[in-house]
Image (cartoon, rainbow, N blue to C red; front, side, top):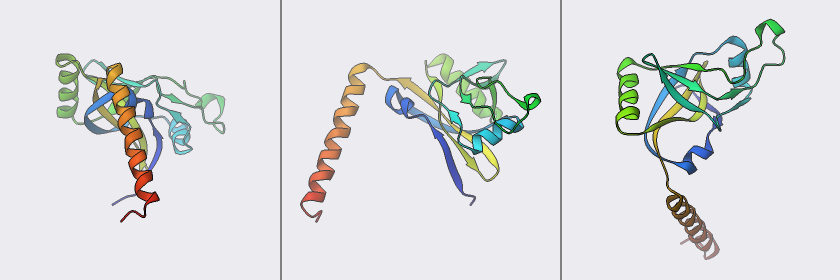
Length: 154
């Protein structure tokens, strides 16, 4: 099994959305883009996945220009990048996002071997009270863990 190196995560997505289903997709990148991704110069914060002509595109993800690339090899940092999935997966994602009201967002970008992969997810937006409940649960879990460590954890 090849090793996986996570280069970027979208922590905001875990806070703002309820994750329903996850998929692994390849990304069509240029040479200078893959070098920037390998250097972890990528931000998923405002990124989302859009459908266009029966294909999925990663939109609004910032990949910083690679400094060592010349002016001819420079790329637009926020250009749309094509996602590479099987046709069945693409059709299912498109139908779920249109019929059921899901959104598709990137969760993390990682390197598997020599290839850059993105983990995308079908998500549903959380309500404000859901976010507060999740924060309260996380705080309670931390408190229990702290108490457990304090009293020997037996």
